[in-house]
Image (cartoon, rainbow, N blue to C red):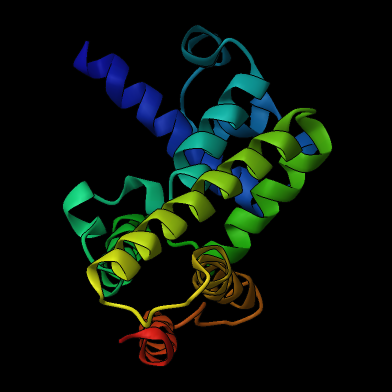
Length: 200
């Protein structure tokens, strides 16, 4: 059982690195076998086919990373605590992925998402649904912050949520082009500056 879990994890890790570097059609079973040392038969056993491997990579390394939906409920009490928890979460995830030695994680995720948009028909709607849920999380926290008096009265919760969400996504996008990726301290500072504009 433990061996199976390790094999599945190794396939996912190797596939993540390959799909981050190459487009979906260019990642063959031969390439996956050579990089992982695991047979095609075992890959099919765990994931059914190459698309199954790709979908697992997408779910594990793209959709779940940097998500505000994963933040614990106790971090939803204040807007400041919420965005600080997000930055800490992204920092922890980056540290966990450090052993993969991927020079630019934002670029890696962008390459995988680009392949998904081309080769997974329902991915666009899945991604749209994901972003709607992310925005709804921000909006709920901001509404709570307004109700508690943390933020200035009269703010539009939806528009304020869009601003905070856009800052997060903007930093991820700018990190695609930066050798050092985006600065998490820079993200925190930008959140702080925006928070200072809306706090009570």
